[in-house]
Image (cartoon, rainbow, N blue to C red):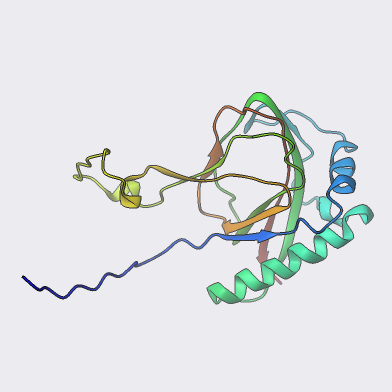
Length: 192
């Protein structure tokens, strides 16, 4: 039997991965580790310098990183057809072995991102929650069949110099940390 078939992937969730490994990653790590951090409700066994309205990327030691991130935000925004957006806040976090990041999204923002300056050992992947799972009320999956349509979460395995951009509404987390995670996170919103 010959049946013609065409498949559409409607309403995709765009996530862009950029390689910034050509930057001086050691000096970025030194900068992040030199900033005082405190406990935060979304982090278990981790600390952050997150403060509403603060922008870690304004640090003079991170000028080149900020320029690269702004270029990537511009590229990502063009792909999605967004109006011009700009960095609105950035911060760093360090999570030790056994820690984790609670499931969350970034309210009042259009694009969010995370940069991994240095991954010296294996660390837990960044997990993104399937945004349409809540609407799947009657599906019964055979999980022995490999299908991208039957996943609660998808993941990205971090490596040194990796920058990930994603829509701010996309919920994400990490499970129990197996290494020491050092990250710089940020948000971008409409340029007013």
